[in-house]
Length: 325
Image (cartoon, rainbow, N blue to C red; front, side, top):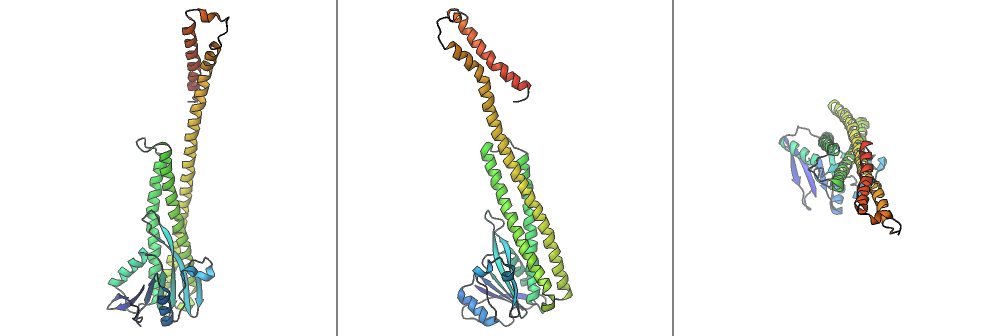
């Protein structure tokens, strides 16, 4: 699908293009969402640029993601999508700056794009250019990453309380630890995705800063780029801290699982020691030798039972006194 955005009447007006319609001359933003090969060719013919394929967008080499070719700047970054769901994922987005116009190529819905479209659809300054729009989108992506990190920080804090403050009314034993491990794993996945997105956006901002001499960014725009670079670096440090905290929680949970297992093994070991002396006494009196005077006495059977009880109680009391139980 091809959508063009044109600054008209003090706002950025959205124009959905049909297969037969031409690109508006005053469009400053051409958005390709899940484009078909025919749509790629239409935009390439109209703008004189090469639209990267989906396979080219996922390449990780910096030379493939950030380059200048034929007077156009090609930039590809990763954006976190579906962060509120149980299955967040990264999606690549390509930005192409050429002739004062921005072309974006993406294959997933992203909140920063809809937020930018909504804001500029209400008010758009005159003389709006693709460079300004590029900085607006980058700023929205960074703001969105900050929101995700804030929510992720609160969720990790909640998981921390669940790990170290056991609720007796909650699911116990192995089921409880399975739930905790799933929660920790989900937060670790989201943290790594946010960090990867920030790293890609940091490289993109650095590339834009290096393009100052080519793109002729205004003083305010250069200040905005530097501010975005500082924000990205700060958020990167914070999400790295969250990653370390998630790793600590994972180690702590696995340690508690080991402690639970050791407690179970200790109980079996104590039971075996407590039951060993009574078993020995019962085995002796089960031999049925002919010359065992206790077998002929009336007090023999009660005495054997008392001896087995004493042999079981004494080790138990000894373990309690030693605080091994």
